[in-house]
Amino acid sequence: MNPRLSRTLLAAALLAALTPARAEDLLDIYRLAQQHDLTLAQARAIHQANLERAAQGTGQVLPTLTFNASHYAVNLDIRQPTAITNDYNSDAYNLQLIQPLYRKTNFAAYAQGKQIASQAEAELAVAEGELLFRAAQAYFDVLAAEDTLGFARTEKAAIAGQLKLAERNFAVGNASVVDVHEARSRYDQAVAQEVGAENDLHARREALAVLVNARPESLARLGPGFMLKAPEPDDMEAWNRTGQEKGPLIQMQERALKVAEEEIEKNRGGHYPALDLVASHSYNKNGSVFSPATYEYTTNLVGAQLTVPLYSGGITQSKVREAEARRDQARAALDSARRTTARLARESFVAVTTGMRRVLALEQARTSSRKALESTLIGYESGVRTGVDVLNAQRELYRTERDLSQARYAYLLSRLRLKLAAGTLSEVDLAEINGWLTGN
Image (tube, rainbow, N blue to C red; front, side, top):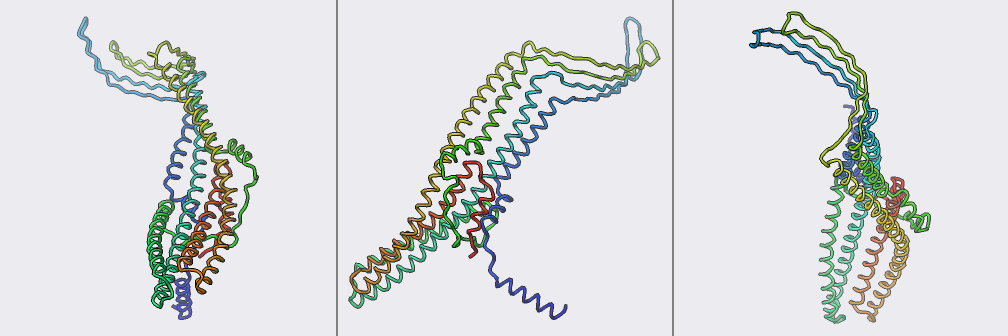
């Protein structure tokens, strides 16, 4: 190998080893989830299976063509009144075409097949929208857990420093034993909180790993481009109306109701006569018991066949009643979906608007907490504030930082939940949020 080329490849390998891996962003996680999420995989399989119901329904109104053939070697031995024995062959085939002209059951099955296919599309849309939201929720759950752990560790380090300072001041008589005991108690609590945060982060990462069948090394985090945006339109009832028109749960249940209604018509068809166009072509070639001659003939037949059901033991009426009860169930499920969509739309709208105010309030609280801690530290150095005061101010700051982090993620998820309820959630919404993320 060329020495210069070898040096170039070695330098490239070293650079790759030293370059940190790119953090996975929200769109990366979503696309991995599309490929590996087992819930969506099941939904896709069910969707494909239900699409076949449309083809099956179409087959109910198309002609059927059958072909039968037979060959028999016949041995006939007659004893009375005259002994006759003969061996001969019997060959036959029949080609038959049946075209339904009127079959209420078949036509209802055809209409039902189309509705089932439409319902399958709606069900898949529900699964895809839920996956988009679940991917975002799992992503931000990990970020929130990482932030909580980071704040817990920062607080523990700050308390450890305050504990050492309290112990040193107590040794020289500048602090009371109360300060030492309080700092020690706060430090032990901080250790416990750190352990709890580590456990929670592990659980959140495991949930994400199950969703995407991978373990991302790092996730992109919210950067300085993060923006608070009010819902557009800024009208709760407008979102509710959109949800009633486009809500995926409502659309799915509307199609389920139509399927149930067609099931009633299909079962009622058991009371109706059936009329078919029948055409057949038959060929027969047979020997005869009374003659060595072979008879060969063909038959062509075209006509209509009427079948009238008279009595089926009450099965048809029972199936109709069953289908009507299932229609009532589907109608109740549709009403429930409408109420659920209205509730989710209103709750999510309120969550977005109040979430914005909460984020703004916590940002102001963070600024105030920082100033309060600075003032407390100055007071502690001058002897007018105690170590307990410092610990309280530190705790307040870290709690505010943690709450602000969680409030931001909750706001983003509320935005997505609102659009999910309204039936307008798409990858474009993830892309917008993704633009606010930056690598570690």
